[in-house]
Length: 130
Image 1 (cartoon, rainbow, N blue to C red):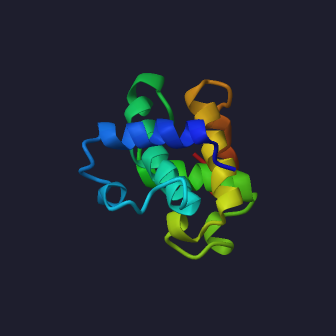
Image 2: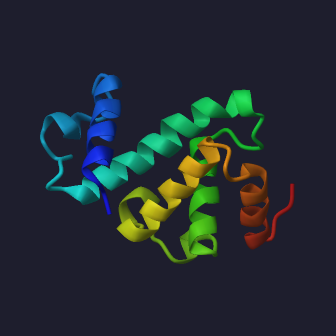
């Protein structure tokens, strides 16, 4: 469930990006009355900006936005995400699962969860090794 504080923080973050990537905010499509849009924007901001920008200094095994999405969704859903969610994931994943994936990504950023282990688990689910 989205809290008022989360709404304020993410509105600020979106505005800080100078709205160039988020014209929906200026149109009023992302608001407290539209929590689905807010959650989906939070997800995209996390996997498209925050995680990739943190990757170089953390020496993570992945750096691309789609890889972060894969790792987080696979681990939350406990299967390769495309087997249960129709692409695009940001639009078609349930809000509950997307919130859980956001929490997992935030834990990675806070060094509370090991991205190396999450990536290895995701690859194992997909029968790949690295």
